[in-house]
Each structure stands twice: as structure tokens, then as C-alpha cells.
Length: 273
Ligand SMILES: [Zn+2]
Image 1: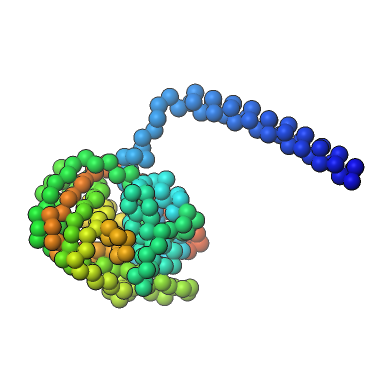
Image 2: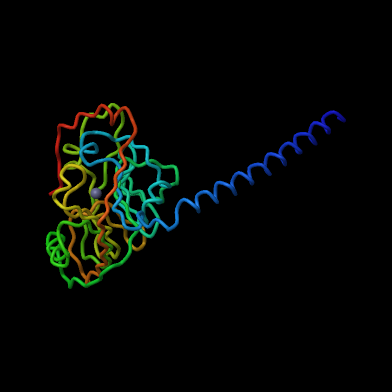
């Protein structure tokens, strides 16, 4: 007993000494950082962030290693898909929602992994109304008319009521992955909702992005009651749509670090438009 007590005191003393040493080191490194970086870096706020590339996603790179927590460090709005296509992703106000193939919606956990995503910190730059009724197929031209130039990147938050909205999910896949998006997307699960209000989260890439990302507009939806969500396939509005826009002039992407990505055959192409 006596020996155990002495041992405990010794361990405690070593612990106190080590923690003092760590504090000293942390203070020194903090000072060093302050000296090296004279101004705050706002790059993350101005950047359109993307994880993986569209070309890889189309060609069956379905096992990514970006976590929800990491995605949130790149933005507070976003869209994409979770690993193994186990749900579509839509992020609004810093909350990443997962919409599974049966339509069930949950909030993504910090360590949930993502296979493909767009994200950005949304800073409202302009806002305008699109009068009802408008169909999804006519939305792009309304947004294009307000763009300074088609050569920049744009992020959208669009809120309104919808007489009808058609949303696409993704079917969960298992190894070995046999079909790419060119086969899976035309056969995706579809959710139809009537008389519903919610927000479209949109990302626009200029055509010159090629196969790095989806060209043009890409929208995901989450209802106000958080019971409906997915990739926007069609809609008809029943109220004026409140459009908020944000132009981005910086673009960044991270590539998956995996054998799958290293060896992927990038021969197939597939685009929504
Ligand atoms: Zn989508």
C-alpha cells in the first residue's frame, strides 16, 4: 500500500512537470505563429471548395476520406454524397444532412465520411426575387441574367414554396463497385413532395471546369421541416423564390488519398447537363 501511494505521488509529480513543459512549448509556438503571419487569411471565406473530382466520382471512386468535420472547416453550405453512396448530402447553416435511399434524413456525425462534395462559406452579396410560378428548367436562365459573368463561380441559397418538387437520392453500393454514376443516376431513387417549403443550396461552375466538377448549376434541397431532401431534379414554385447569391473567384479541391483513386480508370464521362 505504502509503495503504491509513493508511486502514485511520483506519477502525479511527473505529470505536473510535463504539463508545465507543454504549456511553455505552446506559448512559444503561438508567439512564433503570430510573428510569422501578420494578417488574417481570409482565403477560406472566398473559396469554392471541392472534395474529389467529378470524373473520379463518375468512375466509381465511392470510398472517400473527407469527414463531415473537415467539410465544415471549408464552408457552412454544401452538397455532395456520403461514402458508398449511403445518402445524398446537403449542408445548410453549418449542419450537414444525410438523405438515405429510403428518404430518411439524419444529421451527419463529425466522423462520417464523404466521397464527393462542394462547400463554401456563404456571404450574401446580392438578393432578388423570382416571381412564381417558375419551373426548375427556367431557373438557370433567371440566375444567368443576374450573373456578372458566366466565368466566375456562384453559390446560391434559394428559399420558397413549391407546388411540387422531385428529388433524387443515391442507391447505397458495396464492393466490388460494378456501376458508375452513368448507370446509377438514371436509376436513382426519387422522392416526390407536394406543397412544401424549403431551401435550395446551389453551386455553379463555368463550363471550363470540364470534368473536374459538375458544369453549370447543381442544386440540393432541404425542406424547412427537415423531412425532405435530395438532389433537385424538377420543381414548380408556388411562391416567389428568394434568391441569395455569392460570387467566388477562388477555387480549391482536395483529392482522395486512396489506392482506389490512384488506380481509377477515368475513361467514362457523365454530366447532368
Ligand atoms: Zn446532386
